[in-house]
Image (cartoon, rainbow, N blue to C red; front, side, top):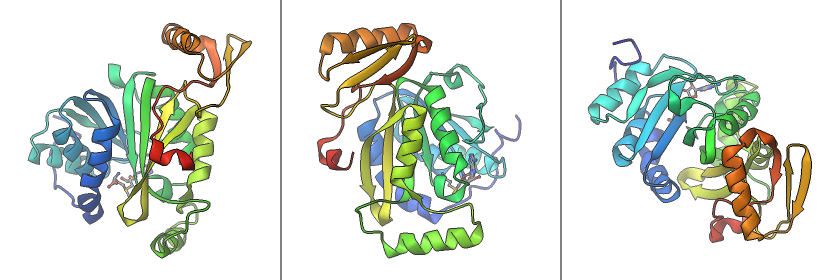
Length: 273
Ligand SMILES: C[S@@+](CC[C@H](N)C(=O)[O-])C[C@H]1O[C@@H](n2cnc3c(N)ncnc32)[C@H](O)[C@@H]1O
């Protein structure tokens, strides 16, 4: 048993205790019944243990940039008697390569990546690293789900988020509450698209990003396969299906894809996408 497996003190974060149930309800709606998930920035491990207990069809890999709380992650998993969480691995979201400790962490193999409360408490470069890492490690229909506070154009910012932003910047000038639009731009640059925005309690958001073949409804598609550009109108179904297959058998040949919806955009949220 190495340190990552050994239960230590189960550290408590009051915020995690408050937000885990509302977050779980979104995960239960957005995720299929089973799959492989990676949690980035697991912290105390309260989230991963709680979600693993409530989503028994999922296998979770926990991780953090530091091993300081690895004993806490093991303690929470032991307390909730979950067997579907792998011992945490050291993973820096901003690193150009993430560790591949098993088949599920191999490139293009994860069904979901979950990351809560990281982007505001890390330098901005971590956001691009997270998006590029997610684009590398998600399976073709996988999703990246983030949770945390954001600023948004056209949405009045809660005083609590402004105060939190000022406090973060005082603690470290590289930290700060991020603009949702900036995060979305980093995601798009990495090949991910925001497909759902869920308003959460205490002025937080959950954002769901999908990999690969997604588009905005009605937007014409532009696909580049092996250097050859193809333009297609939105809704040409048989071609969608051929492209899904092509992506599955030859993902590296498709250098740029814009134009295929593979993840349902939730009607209530369409206006912000
Ligand atoms: C505010 S805590 C959030 C913990 C947990 N996700 C939650 O919501 O309760 C932020 C976590 O991000 C981790 N972290 C900071 N920089 C990171 C990076 N570059 N890559 C991965 N994790 C990082 C910290 O070690 C810490 O555990």
